[in-house]
Image (tube, rainbow, N blue to C red; front, side, top):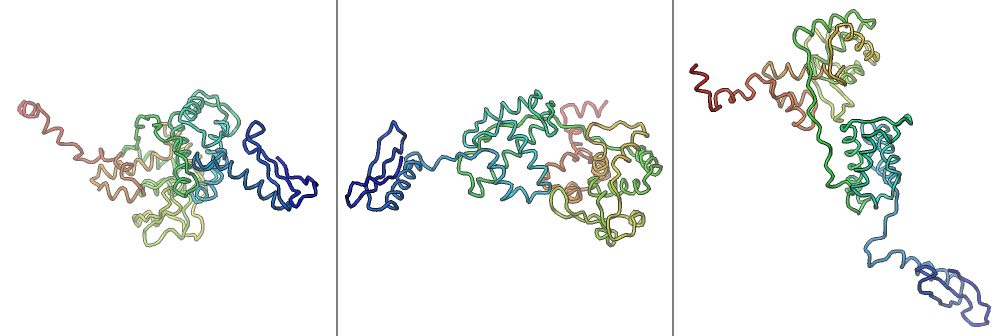
Length: 343
């Protein structure tokens, strides 16, 4: 395709000659008085063919990496840990070969997740490591959220390629918690740790059900009138939990950060106790301990939801079975209840 001056002496010496559908397609030729008119016609003709109105909207040839970048600009950077989420999405994108997003199919992601399970895809450190189904489910949810959010914002008009693909079913993990006789053992070892405030952090977790990071990152401004206000939480909502005067007296009286990072000190203290915790619950067991004992002592499940800062009651219902009268009807309303009671 080209625009050229024929120099034929006519009043329309500028010729536009183009092949909108390639050299094998139909040729279009038209003459104009000026070069500008010929160039404009060429652009108009090629654009009309490129749009293909009979096929619907223009084909979206953006790659998955471009969509992830756009999602991050419009939404992702507002999340609690934006850089971490972005890196995980980029890992998925690279593992899938950064395909054209509009051409991704359910089968493409299904193949990707199987390769992740088999350890055929490099992780952040460039190592090929097998991952657990739960990790795959998180990656599935993250990528699904990218398409859903862009669709909501009007940035994506195609169907969500992951729609209809179920996540792996994961067995409920063991909700380990400290028994009443184990709590003093843990606290004693924490008192003997190299960091003087380790026991205070542990007691804050046990008394409020907060996450380890929420307690470890406390500042003086978050403590007032025997109440702790947790900020920058996982659910992005502040929550305030009352504490006993005795615990309030243990907290350092400073305006800035109250503690220094000491997770390793806690792990060493637990190792000295000889207690064995389920994998991945080293510090989270303190949160489980609060919630479990709260319900065993007759606490209200809705109050527990507020204290823990759960956005979905389903997360809190994991602790419902600790209530003293949970499913007690199973004892009196089973088909052999009278037989058992009469024996």
